[in-house]
Length: 240
Image (cartoon, rainbow, N blue to C red):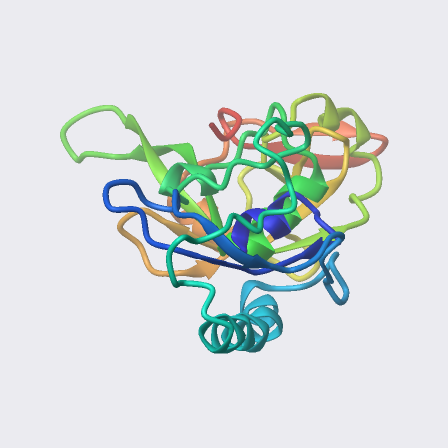
């Protein structure tokens, strides 16, 4: 179901099959939703629980009908409507891993980010974080940051040139950045769309307002830039 929604499919279906004695999901198909499948309501905003509520009753009915019809009695007949030679337009539903939530800023569009956030949950990246030991200069290390609450917005006035570096967060504020009304943390996606980071969790810290979390972790560089009369302060490095 996750991969169905990640692929932007408009329809789905359920399959009744035997269990293979060695390999997962390699049994004989006993019954299957007829092509072209079941329409997914509101596919652009459908969630996994909503999709589960749609297909679970249909799967249960398919099982009951299969038992009543004795489809499991040998010799079983393969009822799959797609032939083994048809391999085009197939989406391999691999196991979902933590890395699937790791944002690829160089390649993901706003659609990709919003879709994965809706289907998989809060996404994450890594950022350069500064620490200031009492007996020496600051040290830097990469820490995981989880973008727990984001929102697609119109970019702040004058910051368009920052879109050339997808994944570089910035604040609409001069250096040193202070949390004040009207200020927030933004980042551009590969297709030039602005994402506002409303809440963020830095590794080892609790969830906090995005701008405050970045200030506390000392993620901002030591200078700001004036663009079209507005000052912006970016992070030291893009998210990775």
